[in-house]
Image (tube, rainbow, N blue to C red):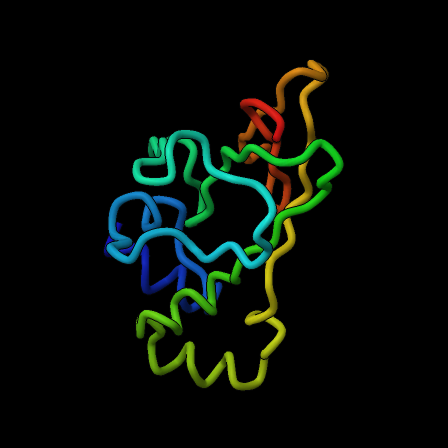
Length: 133
């Protein structure tokens, strides 16, 4: 993957490949900016299997039924916060500050009204799995 990363960064500054998020990211998940909802599991050891983490966002959430979106820091913000931006990315992002704006993900509840389930169906869309709050 390391041979693909420079070409990807050149084409998509401020972002990383999905596999980078799974296998090379050593800094955890992107920050969730709104505080509504909770990860499944206990506060001390939430369930975080890799298949539910996409682009640094955990896709399994328990949320109030009325909740329609969750917001997270952008990939660019995460990379900047951890000092992972290249020099070229920093220069590009100075001119494209919109890439630092929070990312809003739409929640798509399952048809079952007793449960809500979470999988990233497509970019910017979370389907919530688990129990409602």
